[in-house]
Image (cartoon, rainbow, N blue to C red; front, side, top):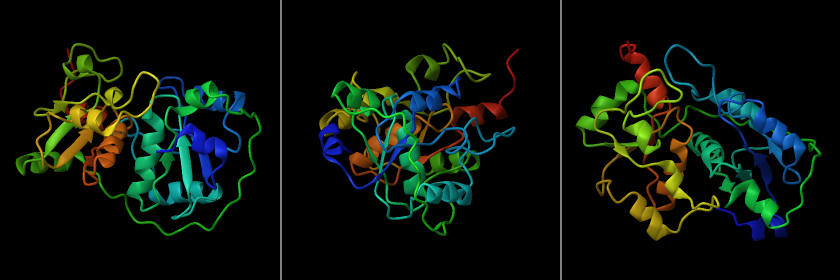
Length: 266
């Protein structure tokens, strides 16, 4: 985690703007072009941080590792490059970027506490200049680590793993479903809404509050985290990592994958 004061003082890092608006795929890039932290490059959730959508696999599949590595190298990001990432959505998209890099063996980015809105509120400079990237050699990467597919879930649950559903309580309960064709949750999952990781200003809560956030999750259990499409679940994974649990798994397809195997509603 990186505080505004430290970034204001200057850091030797590649800065990545991850802003995005679900349902409005051009909005994040437009926001970036209208004003961003000086020196920041933009990465798009669906063009850069996700792969092609198919019949199964969810709305935001993981990008191909080599393609992501090539995109990162084009921005000067190698395996050990210091990186700072931010969004304006309480870590929802910056945490996805954090998870992808960590899962590919890169040095995990530091997330800007409070995001872009905190930067502006603190009087931080805003730029409309798109910086010229300084590419670096593309490193060899393998597959992502720390994730599972739908075929793994029943075996993980049988072995004692706990599924954490990161969506809002009403979506978890099946009372509403604004995006996917079927409402509900994966059987056996606990609801741990991702928004509660941060306060109303989008700043990460302290360790005691984060521990309380996960209080219903049995100690020592393998955690498998999902959401609607494998994006905001990464906020819970980031919070778990701050508490020392770096073994929790992401189910990238999440509910948007799971529900494609269910009968269509009448």
